[in-house]
Length: 172
Figure: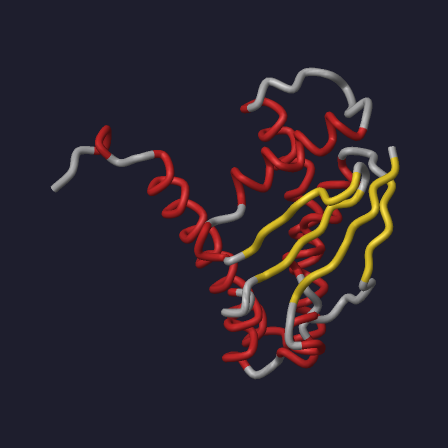
């Protein structure tokens, strides 16, 4: 058996993210069983919105970003990149890039989104409002960043289009 000190940062990060996503999924499941999909979507978004400010505060602290706000797009892209690398596990199959100065592009690999797979198993994918992207939007809101999303959908893109990918145009 390995000692705690022998576990690499990457393996520890993956474990913590998987545990967090498993908690999130079981919470969603039990809400769904108790109150149905419409109320579960509403509660999920409320929880995400409440958590976003706390997450942003913790991310700012761990990366020692002490300024009151992000001042320019280069700072913003560095901050977003750091936040994504900290919170998006390899198992999620999601990538992001900045192909232009103020454009954030995301894509989930062919294996599909972990949330899509889970919600599809629950039988409510056609009415699921994507909490994954909503979390990103709440982060941007907490940072005071204006943005425009394409495609601008609240449902599951993987379910509707067979892939999850899009652009977020950032305005500071």
